[in-house]
Length: 223
Image 1 (cartoon, rainbow, N blue to C red):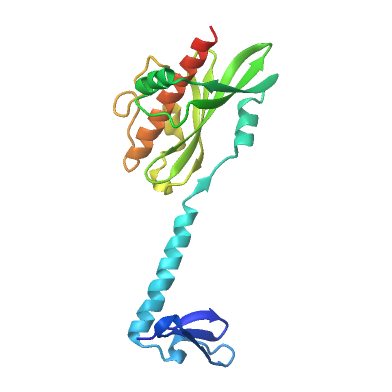
Image 2 (tube, helix red, strand yellow):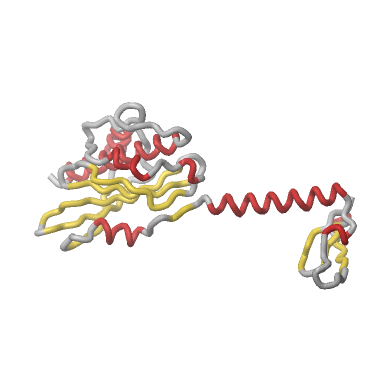
């Protein structure tokens, strides 16, 4: 069985045995080109259509990935009223990592955590963390802002590489505002579930818990 594969223009390639290819050129009057003019049988027509569908599906799938905001823009918005912004790094030993993971009910991917601190009138007023985590098979990137009272101010999605159907609506993220380590932050308890986005809800809730646990360690080390 020989299949016609388009190369360019009116040139088509017929795969042969032994990975050899035979180029067949045909000329068509302007505006007269059609697959029928190549005398492709029904099976070959089906293969051409199948390849087209697969290519189209792959293209549409790539469109599902969305980058909503850059880290630079997110930082500029988060610290719009700050006098100064500095980048800090938290180094965790094994015991500290275990404490955070136990509180968050979610593992840490590293013991080195970078975050940003905004100061106003000489005092820290906001801490910003960037978190990325696999939701189903692809990652989401979140920004979590925490105030000086150790409460979440906001959780926002900067990038989401899963299909958009798995992303909760924007107002859902307001459920995290005001949450502290004293809250469960568990879907079905103090965080609403979202039909069709169960894994996203679970992952984002875990990120919120983990970030609060990390912040608690930052405050502990600053004493």
